Image (cartoon, rainbow, N blue to C red; front, side):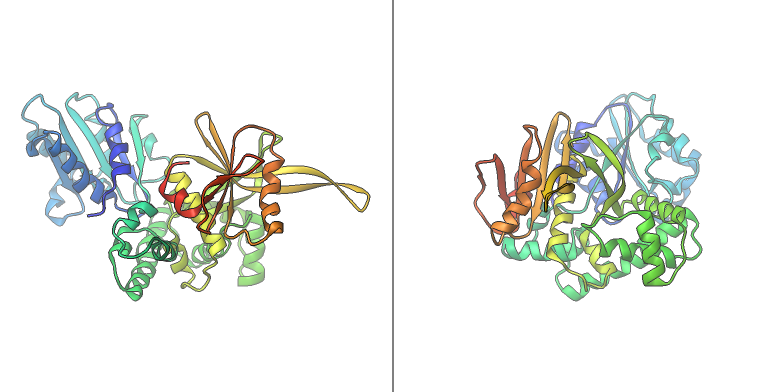
Length: 411
């Protein structure tokens, strides 16, 4: 069993808060396992009797009768025999008609603590919380972190990281031994589950354009892009005419089903957001690579995606930073935009992070340092490198950390 203590703690933090706990996340990231196996095991360890844990898998054909909302209410009510706390765990709740009314019916019952998951294609959109009248509390589950992946990997940390950035962190992939089986699973999952989810949810009859967009975004992780640029790419590379509004709509859909995330540009000195362009990162790198048939494996870009995902897992909001500097080139004053890979905010804390696969010479070192030197505040500045260096801080106060330390330790 892969331990998911990070997410178990998130659930524990929200117990008995009077809200419906909505477990969201990309398909096959382990939502059902956490809800039906890990969480109940914790409840029993703390003294909760089995009879007070009501688990219902609504995708199971044997529970078809409970897809009727009144039958489900009656069944759950019949299980609640005393005033002690009952934990109601519902998997794939979208199979129940009027499920919102069913769940909202338990909001005023003091000894009912409700947790649900559902299919991305019919239930878990970005605005799902509004269905519960402001009484839904989202717990987002991501694919395995590197720490979780390593816990079931038989090999060195270096080998583990290479496999992790190639095949990603979906639990089933991590537990599959043969590379050919991993690739087949990821490719099949993309076609038969993720693309189908999007088509069903948004009633897309022809998925060709959506599929092409996913491929283009997958090819450009780590690069700035915008809808207009994507329209031009469709025209020049794919010979397909597609509108800017359609591109915008499709990108929102991909974010809505947790396939990709958008990182906006932020003017650090001006303290304001810049509308376009932006960067997009894949929730799972194995899915990204599978979409490209494992033919476009650039370690620099995958490392950037890896760092982004880990920061988001830890709860940081992550933007792409921009620093404007004045230069004199051949006697002429010019303004130049320098990029900071990640501007990270969590409450009152902020980090500026550069992702550097390798710092081979002084020129590369200066390239990474220059944007950070031009930020005039006291927040921590970090350069994460792939090389297995010892953590140190330079004279500018910039912290150098190797990728393994970053993935396995809090900054």
